[in-house]
Length: 298
Image (cartoon, rainbow, N blue to C red):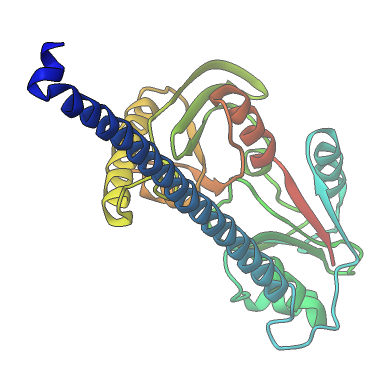
C-alpha cells in the first residue's frame, strides 16, 4: 500500500522486467559464446585432421620416392618384401648364418645412407639401386648371387663393408638380447622398461599434462603454443631424469621423433614408433614395433 502511494510499485515492476530482460540477454550471450566456442573448436579439430592427413600424405609420398630408383629407373623391384619378427626373424637369421660361401665369398655391409661403397655396388651389380632404396640397411650378398637381400636393423652398427666366408649378422643389431632399456617418449606419455633379453625386469611410466596440438576456446594460438612448449620441456626433463635412473648395458629410445631427438640422453639407438595410449601397454607396443624388421630379397 505504501509502495503504491509513493510510486515505488511501478518502479519495482520495471526493475523486475529489466531483470528478466537482462537474464534473457545473458542467456542469449552465453548461448552465442557456446556456439562460437564450438565453432572454433570444430574448426581447430578440422585443421588438426587436415594436418594429420597432410603428414600422412607426405610420409606416403616419401615412401614412394624412396621406392624409385635413385637414377630414375623405376623398373627394378624387390623379389619379395616381408615384415619379420620373433620366431620368423630367428629362422631368417639362422638361414643367413648357415651360409658358407668359402673364403671371401660372402659380403656383409651396413649402409647408413644411399652412398653405396664400391664393393656393394659391384657385388649387387645392376640391382645395387635396390640397396640404395632400402638404406639405411644391412646388405648381404654372396659371390654367386644365390643370397641377395637387405634387412632393416633396429640397433644398427657403425657403417662397415667386409668380405668373409659367412655373413656377419650380430644378434644385438636385430633382436632383444642381453641387458638393455627401452624408453618410449611421446607428448604427455613416458614409459621405460629394463629387460634381460625378452624378459622385462622393471617398468616405470607416467603421464604429464601436455595440451593437444591446437588451442581450444579463447586461447590465442601463440599463447597456447608457448604454454604447450613449456609443458613439453617439463615433460622432457622428467623423462630424462627417469631414463638416467635405469641400469642397463644399452639404451633404446623410441616414440615421437621430434621429442626423441630433443632428449639429452646417450642412446644406443633411436626410432620413431606410433605406440600411444597408457604407458604400460604403449611400451609393449613400442617393444613389438621396434624389434620388427623388414626383409627385402634382391
